[in-house]
Image (cartoon, rainbow, N blue to C red; front, side):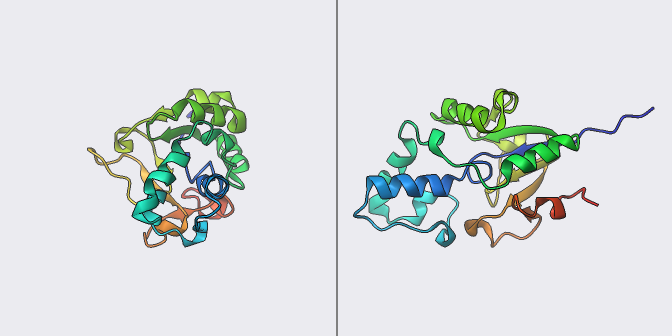
Length: 182
């Protein structure tokens, strides 16, 4: 008897599982009620601070770096159900995120919203091309690194990456567009 091969899905956090833009906007408007803000649908750059005037970029980064920022991020609509469905289909799921000072907060956020097993297995790596997997679901329009990736990039749809062709999805349409659907 041959068992089916378990496929490995790597999943980013910011802008994929966590609604980074909505969480940022809430804190930005609270901390800087006198400054204009940018609606998430108007974003054009992968790095949010690049969508704001240069004179404000330090203030933008200060909001993102503030203790508790990650813990207050809302979950992307449909993310929990989609990951549960992928796991039920037998896919191995690994959260793969960029390193930084907020790793403990991101891990705690994952444990709270997606369970301790996913949080404990979280990988923090600056170069996702070095991680083995079949697919990488990431909002980064062009993840790159030192290696030729072994995974296929699935662009998680965001306003700032719509110029990138190829396989893309969101948590509302993922089942119809999943590479192995059907």
